[in-house]
Amino acid sequence: MQLQSRSYDAPDMAQAIELCYARGWTDGLPVIPPTADRIESMLAAAGLAPDKQVAFIENRQVSVTAEKIAINAVLAGCKPEYMPVIVAAVEALGDPLYGYHGPATSTGGSAVFMVVNGPIARELEMNSGDNLFGPGWRPNATIGRAVRLIMRNTIGTLPGELDRSSLGHPGKYTFCIAENEAESPWPPLHVDRGFRREQNAVTIMAALGPHQFSNGLSSTPEGVLTTACAQMRVSAGTARQPFYALVFAGEHMTVMKKAGWTRDQVKDYCFENTKISVAELKRIKLKDGAFAAEDEKTLVPLVHSPQDFLVIAAGGAAGVQSAYIPGWGSRTGSQSVTKEIRRP
Amino acid sequence: MTVQIYDPTIEAKGRRINYAPRPKSLEGLRVGLVDNSKFNSDQLLTRIAAILEKDYGAKAHIMRRKRSAGVPPHQEIVDEFKSGCDVVVAGIGD
Image 1 (tube, rainbow over the protein chains, first blue to last red):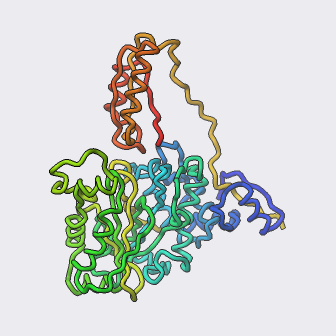
Image 2 (tube, rainbow over the protein chains, first blue to last red):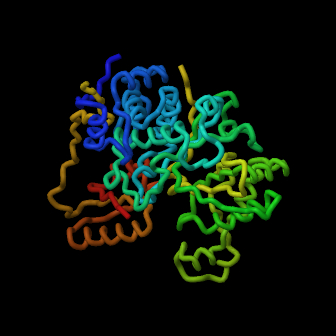
Image 3 (cartoon, rainbow over the protein chains, first blue to last red):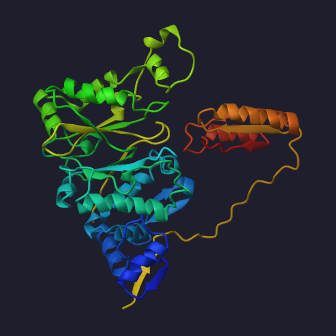
């Protein structure tokens, strides 16, 4: 296997890690030095030749090859068997519907929220439960991190240069979960998006940070969603938000399951109950202009259509918390994308 | 023992991009303005067009709005500017 990338020599492993820092290849945390044997194991696990182009980022005129993906996957601390998930996520980054340049560059500060579905999530022992967005699981931590390092190192999305986030958020280190398909009230997310249950798939969405909401009083979907909608209604920007992910954890999952609510019912309820009046938007300074008589009665939706809510089942079994995750920018700027994860 | 590590960044291929030749003067030229859809971008571009016409002699202007700030102008805009404009103003930040 012939690697094409430039190489550098370090006297030992500790100094190799320091060399990675010195060359600007890390997110601030230590990395695993990308040696030839580690890179080749990554490529073999995905069944890809080093020069295989996985994505072409149009705005940056950057070709992302399997070799560069493998190098960054090593840096991130991935096991070789994670590599097909990362490859699929990079394919999704290159999809024109995702529109890489906008969310990667914007002052709006989005991260790449990734949801893994299918048998591979269980095989890799990805977390879909307790401490869902927190630390502790190698595949969640390192797959998401590998995607960020590819964005940084290979596509050139460097903070302060072509990543102009005003604030960013911690999900820009890693933001990767699996869905809890076994206990979900609904078919898996990827089935909802056109794949078969036994296929493996990853969904990406340009996303702000997760906002936790708590409701321990309600035993009905309407009750739980009333709290979610009240918080989402005022959470969007001046142009409203293009997408929202809704992540329902254990006890709220059970509420949905007992009531037999479908995903579409959740989406429709949220669509109707997150509408806000023009008057309120003007009061909270999310819309300009003088108040008009009809403003109190004129309602503006949060998202373009009910299908712009991504409804996901994941999170710890105990507790009355769930989360909503606002998307980034405009609907024409970036859409969520699902790609099949292929293994050799 | 020496450790050999591989570079995750891309190597520049040395491709050259030729810029369009700059006109010596804007006198009598038609200006195209790319509105990138950012808040107030149309107002800023309208003022720029007024300056180009008043102070630099540009003849006329047209402004067209992109579908989103993060994507290139769509083909209809490119075609219209190619056929109806001599110079184009693009690039509005936040």
